[in-house]
Image 1 (spheres, rainbow, N blue to C red):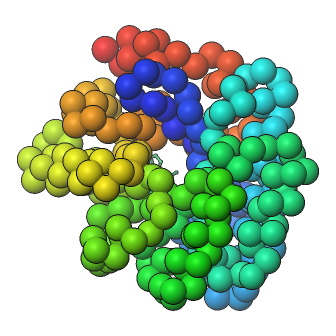
Image 2 (image 1 turned 180 degrees about the vertical axis):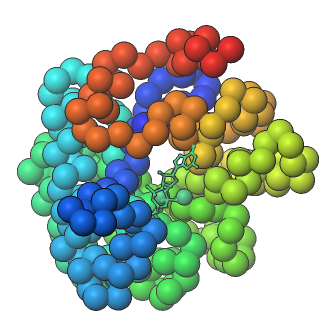
Image 3 (image 1 turned 120 degrees about the horizontal axis):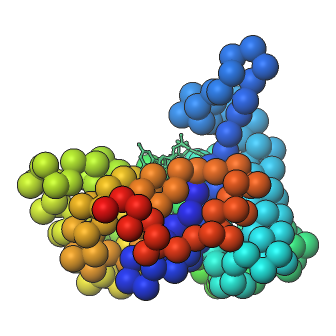
Length: 245
Ligand code: C2E
Ligand code: CA
Ligand code: CA
């Protein structure tokens, strides 16, 4: 799914979202099978497959000239994956294989994943950061982590949870929370991505709050690689805005 820079309208990144099309069951949501994969340990090979596929697709789009070499691919990491001692080495070898710079790769972790084992998490994040890999916190604002703790983490980006964006402009409280989260994140020197942007009104509000990036159906649904290539080829935020007006 594409991520857009709200300030200048450029396409700046993608979030890799896994899909499973099962012969009998049809489409199975990751919300259903990721927890199962986590329980069975299958998340390790599955997660590695996502990392390789994501790197390969980014390389392919760079090679086709569809995107610039500074566009970032973000991959979600679950608890077990983050605890895997081979993780960093695995990411590094894929970056090498697909000739990607560390700054073109981002890992996305929820507060829950980070809280699982704080000291170990800190060490891993520092190692990722030292390599130049980007780190973002997913579902920001929904967890229970203290701000004091978050400040210690070498994080570059926070993602404002979709549950706050969803009810803009109907819910004034959610708007205040969103504005406050963006202001606070900027104070802590994080960049901010808003998730689940679906309407022009939401985009305008986020823009007025100084939100850096947006992601959501307003720009594009998550797409399979062939459609994504077409999207990149045709992308122009002004056209999307005109179409929704
Ligand atoms: P997430 O990381 O919070 O991902 C965002 C979810 O919001 C995605 O659901 C995406 O399709 C959906 N979304 C994006 N924009 C909009 C919008 O404008 N409106 C609405 N209503 N929804 C929007 P999805 O793809 O079903 O993924 C669900 C969750 O499964 C993800 O939540 C993530 O936690 C997990 N997941 C997906 N792919 C992976 C993966 O490769 N590895 C791991 N560990 N987890 C994954
Ligand atoms: Ca995510
Ligand atoms: Ca999220």
